[in-house]
Each structure stands twice: as C-alpha cells, then as structure tokens.
Length: 212
Image (cartoon, rainbow, N blue to C red):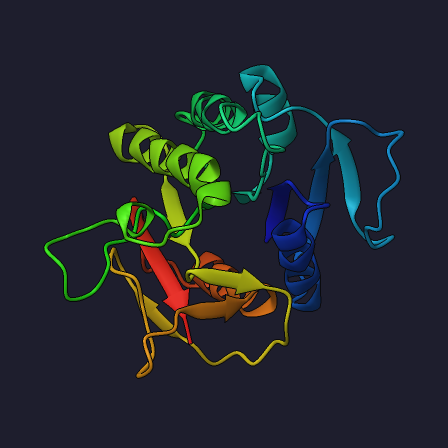
C-alpha cells in the first residue's frame, strides 16, 4: 500500500513508519518543518504539510491508499489536536482514502463500573488530563463524521517503548486489563495492531483498542 503518516517523527509515528516499511509498504512521512532534524529511514518519501490545512491534506493524500495520523501537540497546545482532526477529515472527505488515527486511552470505559471513563476515574494523572480530554474531543469528531472511511485506535492505559511481540488482545470501547488489573501495550505492538488493521480492515468507522 501507499501510506502517508502525519506525526511520523514522533514516538508512535516513527514505529508505524518502521512497521509499514518492514511489511513492504511505500511510506510518505509528513513534516511541518523540513529544516528540523529527523531520524527517518532513507527509503521514506518526505512531504511538507500541516494536518490542520485541508489543502495540504488533499495534496499529500492524492494517490495514497491510507493516511495515518499519530500527531500529539506539545503541552499547552492540546487544542491543536481538534484542529488537525478537522483538517484531515475535511481534506479526505469524498476521496476514498482511508484514515486511521492513533488516539488516547482516556475515553475508554473502565471495566466493572457503570461506564466510567478512564479519564474520570480516581487517580488519573493530572498531567495528562488535558491531552486525554483533547483525544476525547478528537474521537467525538470522528464519530460525527459521515464522509471519511476512518478507524480510531486507542492504546492501553500505559503506552511505552518496548519490544515487538505481535501478541496482544483487541477490544472496542472498554479498557483492556490483565488478570492483575494492568493495562499496557508497547509502541511497537501498537504499530503492529495498526498495520494489521490497515491490511485487514475490521473496524471501519469504529474505535478499537489493544493491550496485552
């Protein structure tokens, strides 16, 4: 497939790029500042653009099979996530190009509760609450869209660099936890789950989640 990745230099995006290349796909990495140093593989095609600009999205997505967005605004600029989501949805509307977004875990419901969201659960870290709420708004924008073939991927509660095992569980809107109540996934295996979905679509116009 021809895959374009917004946020390709980030922690998750870079692993999505690596996994896609390992599977033989053609990857275009979108950067906002071409002068900024990056560590992308030489086999990646670079494109300059901003997800917030529908015109950039239309130009960069032309001829592509899939667009992946794994962008994360810096602290204090969480509102930019909604702007980027609107730009992507507006730019891809009616094009037939599929969109997979890496979102957050905060909007997942906590098991054995009355539907309490993870972001509203006791002990949720204050420092990541703003981005979690922004991801919740992002998911709402996707669910309200009627013109794009989208999929929204929520990670486990703990998402960290790790190893690629290729072994994990999939769920929908409820947080996946193990027998000890832990919820975790490596960034590498999150990328595996995303490319699995790209190659074998099973969650069109829906959210899914992944955890060990």
